[in-house]
Length: 153
Image (cartoon, rainbow, N blue to C red; front, side, top):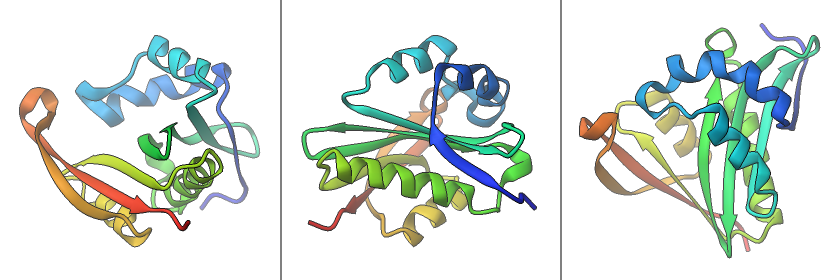
């Protein structure tokens, strides 16, 4: 069990901490260091958060992009040893707060059709299935479910 966790803004220093997990967790969809650096550079539209333990060990990360009144959850990851502790839910809550603060009214995301745990989490937070993107993941082998959450006005 994780005793104490802080949710803080991601910094470039966190990128080196998350990269050893990125490929194993996201496979062919894994992002690069450069990709994360580019994402962090866009303060206007993007917010990235990390979950870290008291000893600054990285436990998870998440990001959202907001353009006009729409937000898109870009990534949510929790390292294997910290899963099933509520961290993904806490990171998602932080993203939703950031999206609302930037004026988003709707939040979208894509999730692998076979990622039962993530789909369950998103549904429990009020997201609804609104579509399917055929062949979205793994070079066309796995579909994505598009989900949407309407934020309170």
